[in-house]
Picture 1 (cartoon, rainbow, N blue to C red):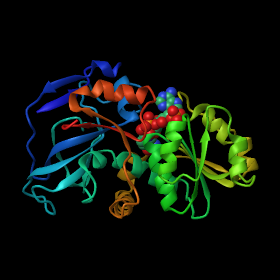
Picture 2 (tube, helix red, strand yellow):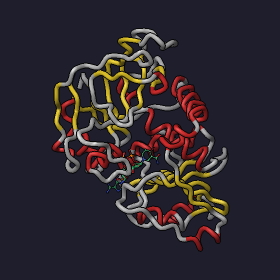
Picture 3 (cartoon, rainbow, N blue to C red):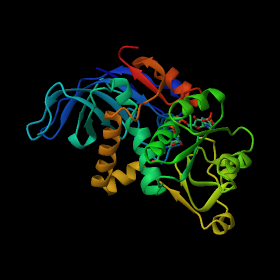
Length: 325
Ligand SMILES: NC(=O)c1ccc[n+]([C@@H]2O[C@H](COP(=O)([O-])OP(=O)(O)OC[C@H]3O[C@@H](n4cnc5c(N)ncnc54)[C@H](OP(=O)(O)O)[C@@H]3O)[C@@H](O)[C@H]2O)c1
């Protein structure tokens, strides 16, 4: 089988596509023949060596995929050969077949394609955990979603709408904002210039109740200037290049809180709560209320071009690798 392998931290252009012996399912594992793979910003920085997790070299990157169950270990119940599943990896997804513990996979709703399933988990679980456990977002509140055209951001737009919030989508291009609008965003803000007055205008002067921030840096600094009393600022990531420094005087004035979230740590610490989150997300997806938006598809061995699309800020929603591209 083919595997994408990182032999040294640095450029994703140096990733190798290599032949490896196919895995076998151990007694407690399920073997999945993978059909599509989600590519994330996290993969780009993990290969670059700047992510908080630096796997031992060489390693197979990739954190999410989808495929078909092809073998089942003797001790495993609840799965059948041919089941369609979405899979989680920490990392190791970018292989054609993977033997995984059953807790690392969920059934794919009938209406969801392998590509949509491969790009579902990371964005939607992060968005849900951030907005619900991190931000305690309530129906009727206003959520300001930064980086709203990205993988996390576009998922957060959809989840916030399902939670009954008014959504202000903020992103760096008209094209990204148009996609956010098509997923239900109520107000659109191009944040290449300052945006506090536009958030205030959209909220009758109050400001946002919850800010979902995968970007950090200047964008977070500006967001701190347009929050409501009691606001919650959810710190998700730093694609803008630097962590922001939350000004504690601004938090004090607005009785606000800045909350960091890590969906992987949450899932390990509270697996039942993470499963409940996922169940609710899959129910919404099954009902057609959530959808993975895929802007770019690449064949498996074009991982360098897939990652360049993300690094160059061209992706909208998700980038996926597929056997069929
Ligand atoms: N905390 C957690 O549990 C968790 C889980 C998953 C991911 N994350 C983090 O969330 C962040 C976003 O991940 P993602 O997969 O959504 O990424 P993504 O799809 O690439 O989206 C990130 C967005 O950031 C904006 N951006 C601003 N400056 C950028 C720059 N210099 N380079 C690239 N993008 C830039 C882009 O929007 P504009 O062009 O509109 O500005 C882009 O759409 C990452 O930092 C990732 O590590 C955190």
